[in-house]
Length: 202
Image (cartoon, rainbow, N blue to C red):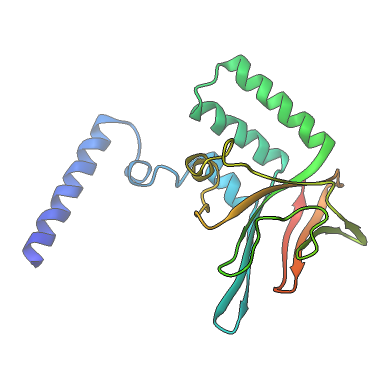
């Protein structure tokens, strides 16, 4: 058994060495292609996650990605590569993202709960409250929009949100444009409260 493991390890090593000789890419990029991907790194930088437990039982998990200027630029590049956009199409998409960034401050919010209905989150929802804190200002969303499966099927969510799992429900939460600086998004309700914060939202 140990001999078989050694042989398999040797075969894998030889395959990696051969692949590296055929390309200029480091072995790490071949084995873990997303490890140094600019979009994945940007998404990790701008994503926060927190969970609420009742003893050992999970109540809910909230994960939020702030659509910062840096993230929007990386998103456009990833989208252009994924959908083989022309340079003019990518340029138009970037212009659209810049306009959206000037108009509102947005986060992508993913909620997951084993026992509670998180599929009806809205501005008027009475079970869950979502708001943002910036200094002394408390901001309520102008819009909470569910990412529909028709536009965002699971394969697409998995491509653009590395933390995706099938039990999450995704929303785009829009606030009035906030000033550059610290920002905290709060998700609160009977199940508990989480705070997702960024030191320098821009």
